[in-house]
Image (cartoon, rainbow, N blue to C red; front, side, top):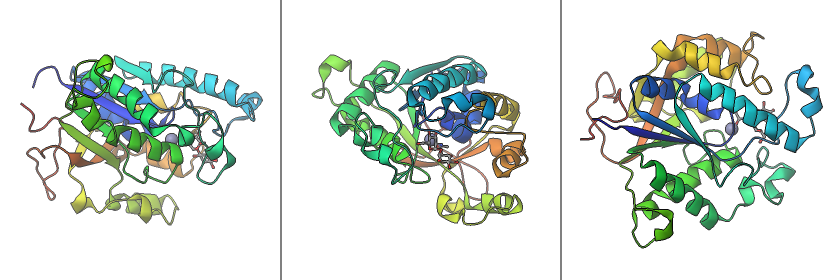
Length: 280
Ligand SMILES: CC(=O)N[C@H]1[C@@H](O[C@@H]2[C@H](O)[C@H](O)[C@@H](O)[C@H](O)[C@H]2O)O[C@H](CO)[C@@H](O)[C@@H]1O
Ligand SMILES: [Zn+2]
């Protein structure tokens, strides 16, 4: 199909590259329109390198720094249009589940759901994507901002298409397919080889997944983008994440279709290899 438009909705800077970077790179390379929504600037993140120690305990400064990191990271992909949900700094990082930031004024976890839906509908109507990607209802691993990003998408798909919902936000738009980014249960072998146990709850049985985007041709771009997130990830310490990122399989990104018609697939589980499969 011509004029393919993909929208990804993530919680913090770096999530888009970690979970879906090869997918973004592939569709940009294939000439699709790719846009990204990031819900917070990651103000409460840790700072893992000492040369950025001045950012520790400085949420505003860390947020500004991470906005710079994602600008540099997205440039590695080429033409990706980037939106901050509600505008830069509208909603702030909530911290990990159970932390004080969850209740802080201005945190994404405390956002008015109606305002979040409105902000998401405005972007959906502006970008008019056929395909939207976000997290599952657990946010992948339970982070409140990831759960919030999931809810932002799942509460806006129908209003975006409803002519009676906020007509001032633009012409109605019906998204055709919604996918949740997931980790296949089969990844456990790699994870356990890297010395990490207890990862199973964050995975989905391979037979329950519906699509896999093979982005191995774009593994280098995904890694180049991740290298811009020095405050968050270290790809050179030989640790679990660095080992995972180095493997070409890390660029094979898996999805579960939750809205729309499943297109033709192939292989053991009849997975779609193209998220636009089945669309006219
Ligand atoms: C990948 C992701 O969503 N990262 C979030 C997460 O970061 C974790 C947090 O800093 C935790 O304290 C660390 O132990 C853990 O290693 C980090 O992955 O939560 C942050 C705060 O909400 C967020 O800024 C970061 O992007
Ligand atoms: Zn995140």
